[in-house]
Image 1 (tube, rainbow, N blue to C red):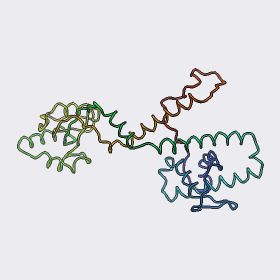
Image 2: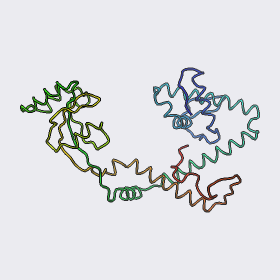
Image 3: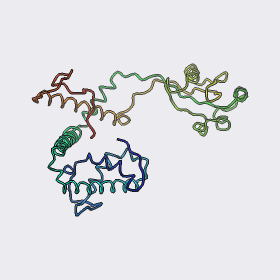
Image 4: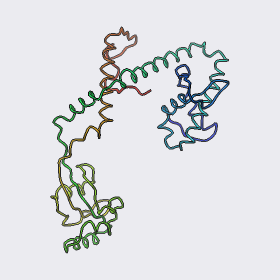
Length: 292
């Protein structure tokens, strides 16, 4: 659900509509900081945090102080209308009861996934998955290159002559390159693999040997380049620390799928509407653990 942030009551309407999906009965009432109070009922920091977790990405561009104010006001609006709903007897309606049954099941599932699956993943499991995925891995070839970018072919040819006369590549790049990103470091682009640069630039970079410099300007959509290759290598295997977050996500996904498959196998499931999938098959075997 997307909404356009805006100030005041109108700006809270989209957020309020989204917050309707948060069941009041599953919001923890703990002894903690109270951020607001509606008709004597506390709105706690944990409730505010829950709303922040749900809508944080959509409010990412809003300054933090404004974001907090928007969320608190939206929660106030929700509780004001919830009190009105209670007074109107809405809690006795079949629609409300059906919605609460769904939201309760959703909250139970999410809490179980967080506490019984994700929280119990061990370092040994993460390490084992990393070792499995990196066993026999051979990285792609990559080059470490520098370049000097100028606007015209005449400028590029003049620099080539300057280099042929003994000019220092890094010094010339710092003085004359039009690339603001690499100019301060003497044209240094670091390591890159095939597919990361425009085709003309890539072809020249991977044709040169370490220590070699372009013999003619390379024209691309950005201008004219002169390249120097510093090093070529096979991209090293990333360390576990570098990819730990991705590995954890894979382990979480696999544990979720494995656990769900066993649960479905043990459960008595009756699908009463037509479906192409077997009754005991997960709807989406590739789906990661649910976030909400």
